Amino acid sequence: MTDREMQRLYDVAEGNLLFHTGRWGGPAGYRWRGPDGTEAGTVPPWLEEELDRLHDLGLIAIETRRGPFDRVVTITSRGLSALHVANAA
Image 1 (cartoon, rainbow, N blue to C red):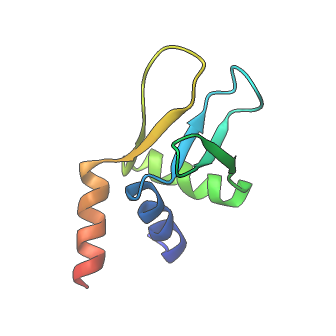
Image 2: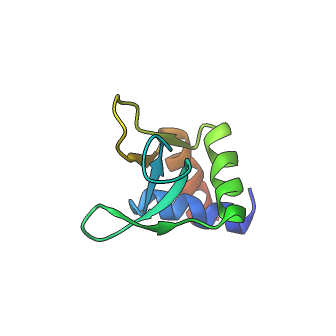
């Protein structure tokens, strides 16, 4: 895992990201999460690629539910393990 991907993992662990489904108000993709829990801006495409890779590796998960609202992006137990290994090194 690259340093940049590790930073994205920290962003997710800190609760800084949402996933927009694209069903309303713009295209699908990751969004920054503001202090009040709402969308606070789009994530640049190169960071989206890193987040997609973390998702593909099972290190992060996107909340599953019905409806058009933003989903919370969370760290998985596998992602927490990766953070602990990185912090121990």
